[in-house]
Image (cartoon, rainbow, N blue to C red):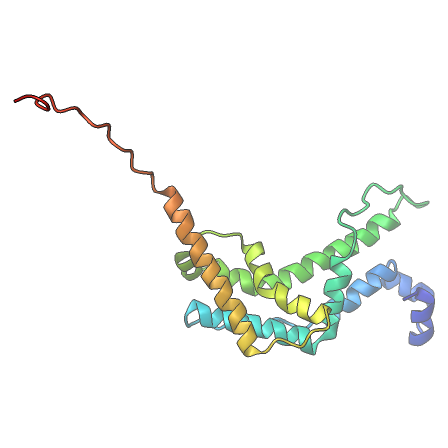
Length: 204
């Protein structure tokens, strides 16, 4: 995507385009932000399993029905790990590379917050903490949604409700097992008492 291609198709003057968007990266970030579908929060009531199944199914539907979501996730995720904020300033004292990086960083933050927020609201709830113990929320989200994204990227068939439910059940089983192991590790081991020799032992 180039500025020349955009101005030719949109019939917007280059100066007008640059006045609204500092670069093609800013334009692309704004377009993705506008096109990203909203995320619907999970049901407020019900048991944890049912609510997790609901939110994972909703996420899978978004990924299958809205290719732009997967596109933006790939575009954002495959970007540089560290943004080039130390680039030399431009002729007017500005930092074009740093500005583009700011646009990408802003989009990354918005995408991350938008799609992880429903999971965080549920996984950080007292209900989840009570049933699953303490855990890394980011890792939990990855375990729940990662298989859905991988299946789409790898060109596999879309995961159906039964498969998505199995992902949730496997996650819950793993978390509960991990919580039990953690609880056992906090229980101090019983210290064996040294045997005390009976003074009458061996005496008639």
